[in-house]
Length: 334
Image 1 (cartoon, rainbow, N blue to C red):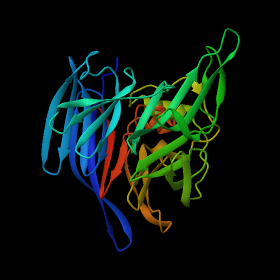
Image 2: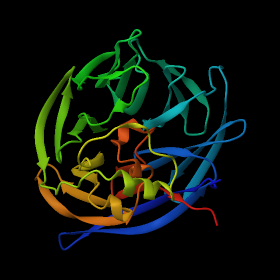
Image 3: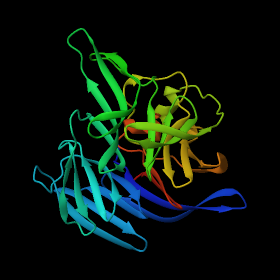
Image 4: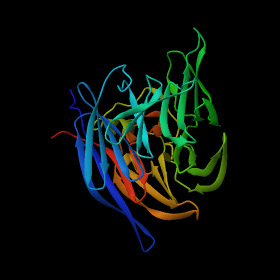
């Protein structure tokens, strides 16, 4: 039986020297339980599972604050946290089971909740908040009747429950494999701007959200080699890294993009270029100038070996905030 992996949260910052892109590791934190994290406003939040609930770690510059949240149905309790974001000295944590955001101040005091108006997606990835309303990347699953296909859709949603950007709809046989050969949305939201990509091509659009409209203002594209999907090689990766690959229909070629993250004038893209070499490639762009600043190689990011688009996972394990890049990696127990 395999040992569970330790989860190491690797914090790095990049510096731009002579037009080149460099990564320099600053700190590393190890967690025994599975975690997810979110960043913003120069802060890092880490949600870690505990026996009785969850620990929320807040890192700001040279100090760390930690407080505990109970598991339960109570107003200030969590059932299934799924990421969050910082906004004006407040911490918003999405609870998928409660279908609402729980709001805390930075000392851990409960400030209230922000319910999500139906229809609430079965799966959701919080991106941020706009004019008091959460922006999420949402997934809707609807199982078909006996003998009929189920339906899967994926949208960028501004909650009053209405989609901003409509994703592709796919269908699968009830009891059959989910089709991951389809086109998936990847998204990052910061400062009222949305970066949007489709994982079949290395192309990212950056635009503004105006009401319920997405208005593109820049586009980043890069030619990438097509890498044939190799179930054998990916399962060799899985032999060393958890979790196991999902049973699904896969594309003929590896998707070129795993995740994206937007911060100010910078866009960071995690590509699958060297995934079979156990390496994540980070491309950095100045998106207003459409200027490619270079790339850096780091150990394989959390769950990237699954070769699924990152929003299908609980979170991508990757985020850019100002001059800091945050990544999550599996580590084998010693």
